[in-house]
Length: 101
Image 1 (cartoon, rainbow, N blue to C red):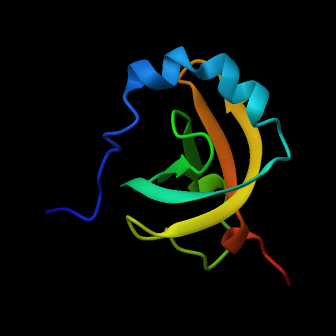
Image 2: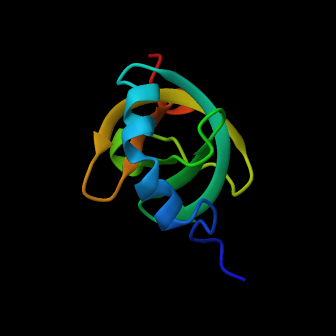
Image 3: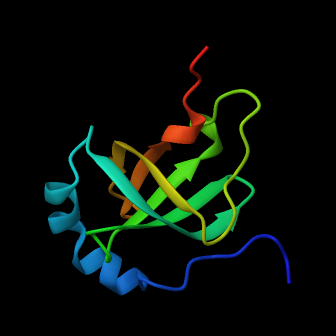
């Protein structure tokens, strides 16, 4: 098995169907917690607590220097920074990636 995995749940149909409700419930600036459910070289997919039909993505573009991708199954926290309408993803910046220097 590879270290990378695509999320299987929620389904793309569930995410699309709930998109308007997701955007309303998770405006930019909202603090979130969740679990890493998919991992790719470009970032991690997150099942957001309290919004289980939403798909979060924390991409490497928001990583601070020296940070690494969290493991599949890891519990994470962060902040909503954008909504990507074309693929129905909630963009997240993980708390652990914020450079405190």
